[in-house]
Amino acid sequence: MNIVKKISFLLFTLAVLFACKKESPIDTIAVNGALSGEFSVSKTQKVHFSQGNLKHPDNHTWSFATNQWENGDLFAWNHANDSTFLDWGINPISNGGNQENQWRTLTMNEWMYLFQGRANAGYLFGFGKVNGVKGLIILPDNWDLTSDFKSATENGYGWNSKNNYKGGKWHELENSGAVFLPAAGNYLPVEASGQSAGVYGDYWSATKISVDSTSIYKTDVFCVDFYQDAFYPNCCARWDYEFSVRLVQ
Image 1 (cartoon, helix red, strand yellow):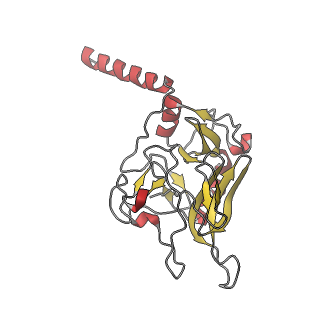
Image 2: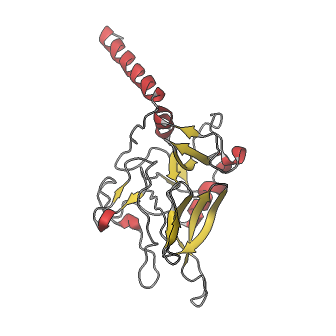
Image 3: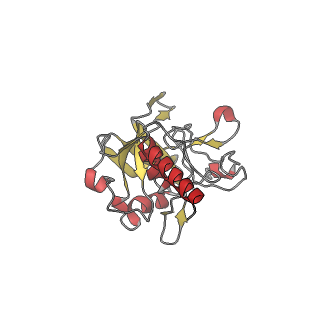
């Protein structure tokens, strides 16, 4: 290795070490909106998560939050008059490739497989904080289980988790494929109330509950729900409730 290459390598190494020691937030790195980690959502399918929660301010451009710890917007479940689900991912997303039909919402079965069906599932997610934001951390299939991450299986549920990452430490985890779902709150229009960000995390699935049209649950949809000391990967809620959306491809 010549002297120029040695110096370049040394500078690169120092830059990486410096970034990992920083506590100030470092922007998420993604390719056309997709994070690097691969996650099994069935026996035959893997997905990449988007770089952040979905945003649609003032009904204009669709986009992803710049960073995973940002809340994004809240949405009622998107459906046609006949109750057919209209996936948000059919829209061009400005920082997600900006083309139609590039993204989609996980079904309830896929969410369940992610949290309970894939190999070592119970050791690949846990509560935590990223740059001071409370939420749920999900690790990719190839995660090293000898790391210091404290899973829900080992550490239980709750914001008192030992998983507290800032700046360069989160950047390092994220670059290894980790996904973070912030507890972005919710809004319940019927009750004209909601839970503030940092209290509840609710994420829509693409799956409506299959019941008779006369049932009181005919407008209920499956979702992922987590808060202070509880986690429900197959919860359900009225489709006019406003929750977070995290897309995959």
